[in-house]
Image 1 (cartoon, rainbow, N blue to C red):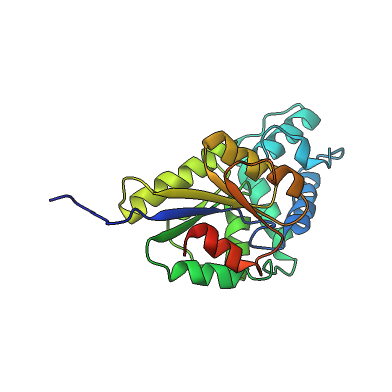
Image 2 (spheres, one colour; image 1 turned 135 degrees about the vertical axis):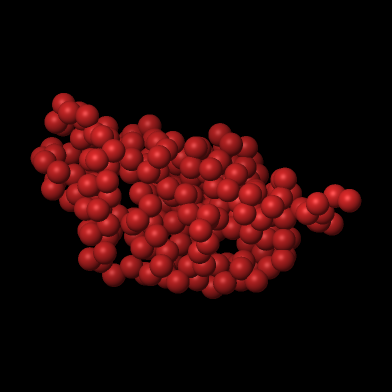
Length: 228
């Protein structure tokens, strides 16, 4: 007898957080730059989108080491995460309108699972999800603490979801994000992609297997895409 047999293999959604579920892009960037300043970095490249890896761990390490000519160790990363958390915590964190409704809907669907993969460090990301009452488990938040690339983070989220839900494979894996780095990660990993918001619509439109939504209010198009 086959274990964990399913007539239909489940679908997995991999959610980005900032700008996708929480309205925190500017909040996070301000806290990020403030944390570096508190650690002694006076001159900072504020164009955080220009780095090869769009993750907190990689960008903070690169800026710190370039500015101070000193190694950004695990101790420094821990210090930076605490400062970043404190900066984010000062702000009023709101959902991207419709995000909580969407997560609640997904939670109640059979054969549809979701996880979170973010370039943020773990504690600030957890704070944001808690502030919008996002459903959580012990395994479904994956951050950049131990990984520099988005691809590593998304792959970690997918593997953890397989183990958590005791499945060998998913019928579909769909990445959802608002930035070009989310799009490129999905492209590099061969995943389906849903792009949210208007900022990167021209970029999203180049993706061969995907959906482009201006906001979460257009749930009908999303549900059609998911075959729900």
